[in-house]
Image 1 (cartoon, helix red, strand yellow):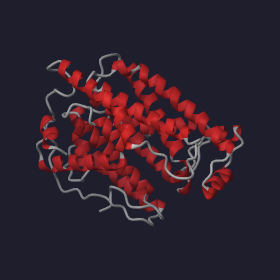
Image 2: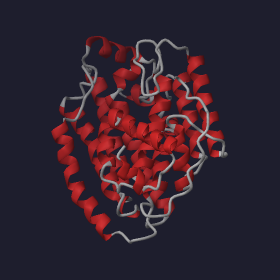
Image 3: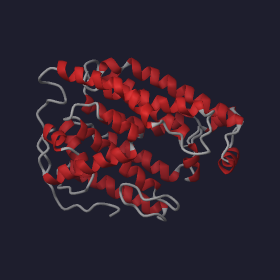
Image 4: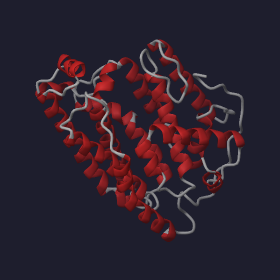
Length: 345
């Protein structure tokens, strides 16, 4: 992470600065589209968003570090049991709670997260919801209907979006902005579910709601057949198109709430929305052939999508008030560095 960003955010503690830099590398490596959108934020806000994303990815890789899957940013080895991964998640949750209670933290990601939560007054209740969703990934292999899936998403992408809302800031009613962020989180997660259905199936998970699957004549055996052949069967195509329509409806709802965000945050959030909607466009363009390989949006296309946001971001910074925005509020005091060991190292 550039010293300019950390200096702009008022982050001085060397341990905390190193943790923020680690989170930025995780975002840049694993969240290419989201990282690109984050670049449109004022420099002082970027470290906090990197910390929130880096933490979420770190926890996610603990969950996914099983047989046949490579180690992620936490450096987890493969071949670990569900019980071992659940215990590591518990340790991570305990370390976070200790850090938020004021205990020293040297964890390579949590040190930045704790600083971000305290600095931006993020609701700590959002994190138990997040850990509940992560634990569900270890124990739950399917969801009976869309309502059950939405309960899961509330603790996953939606919780992450609400955490970030505290960093972005709002200029309208907070509850209305939260509804927009919830819709965006659902849209993003539905997009990932559609794109990653094959990878999730390999991990023993099917996020496609069972009731919707049944309505389109799809079952787990048919999904396994698609995975084995690398071809998407017509019934599965229709199911994925149906879920894509739900994601697009969520994006439309989220767009309506963009004016409620602080002006400096709008280009970032709008670009993230458009980039993820472009993934849906790409999936549709290849006729929902998501079993043949991971569907990606090309780098030139991502840059073309992000380009309009550059001018919008510069204008928002030039016209932002000199005080009172999240990017210019006085920074909180860094929590003390300590000796907590990092999980998975």
